[in-house]
Image 1: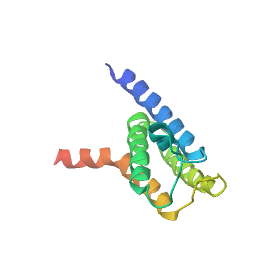
Image 2 (image 1 turned 90 degrees about the vertical axis):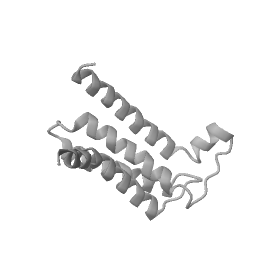
Image 3 (image 1 turned 120 degrees about the vertical axis):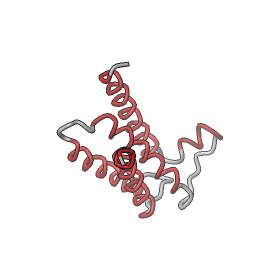
Image 4 (image 1 turned 30 degrees about the vertical axis):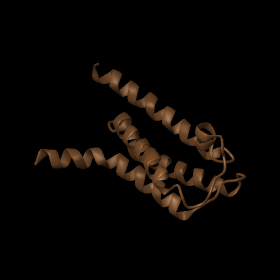
Length: 126
């Protein structure tokens, strides 16, 4: 595939993943557990790794899709704001819990995901 097709694929993956995050964040309960085991019950405290990995994947897909875009920094701000809003919504969604540590894991996953490719390229040059 040529570069443009890869970019289209990455952008499609990015928007699908962003939609997935939105869907599972606004569902009143644990949508993934509901699908996998039939139990939508949520418990505070046990999902830090999933928060990190979810936003890490979003960050990687974002970097692959938009690193040459002139709005790159603005879009990073949008993604951070999106992360904050998704976590704050848990204060009003039934059976969901707001946790500062979840918000931290979202942020760390996003930032590391966005910049891990750049860090890898930096070390591979030396």
